[in-house]
Image 1 (cartoon, rainbow, N blue to C red):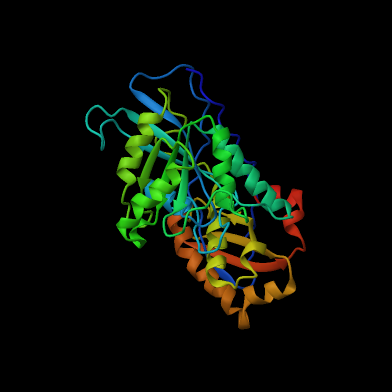
Image 2 (cartoon, rainbow, N blue to C red; image 1 turned 90 degrees about the horizontal axis):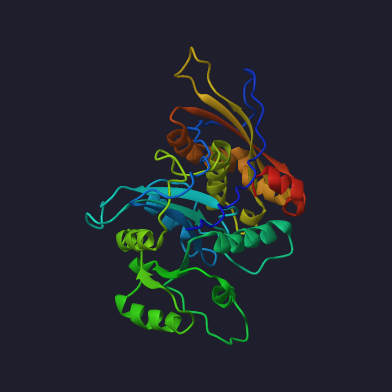
Length: 363
């Protein structure tokens, strides 16, 4: 069986320089380093008897819960979440390893499911960041063995022929061009009356011949077990693409920057989130003879206007201090030791149009 091309990985952000022992700048908070996971080696030729593996794309409109669902499946936070649309800006690879017969009986083969969490599909705005996000999501549709279209079950389904063509309608029109099975996942079922499910499923059944309709909840985990079993049934016989100890492919520094950006999204006004980027400028590990010492991180928060900078810093630096204080525990859990985090804010006008900067930031 011919294996589809392995998804191309986004270039990693530029490696920050190692610092000397200078103190971090003002507004420093304690932060930390995380374990470094190796990139997956090229898979061996052929397949392993009784083993299945493949790529599964999570796609959908912004804010339907794709990243939350992935985090629940992996039982690890590999993709940040927030109430702000378009939180995910790059393709995030998360790997779930399933031993034989774990939940589907003795006949269920061992498997490795490689999830591709993508930016929400939407009509791209004028700047290059949005265009890159949409291109990333569309590319994942063609790279995967299986596609999971996630919808928000609390919203009304898109109507065909509507005068205003919304994001969901555009996705549904794109599905016939995908030569792969597509599951429809009705997420957030914990928020609705279950009597709404059958009419909702019927409405989407008229739009596309989905291979499976499955109600799920990224919050409670309802439906996740049956989802994993159904995915394995649709994966090809193959070999592991990643080591059994690896749960994602994101570089440590990118994950650290994303965790900081998540806290920015949670605390800033509507005008700020889409104009914010975070880049880790400096990462200093403690010396070998001081294993209990903190890792020092300096991260730059970039916005497009001076007014946004003022919001992020806050009166007397309080907002920036809050962001750093909330980010530090998650960074320490990621790295495994204490962290000294130093944050500062700079203005870079129209950074979302700057191709070189977008590549540096990992977008």
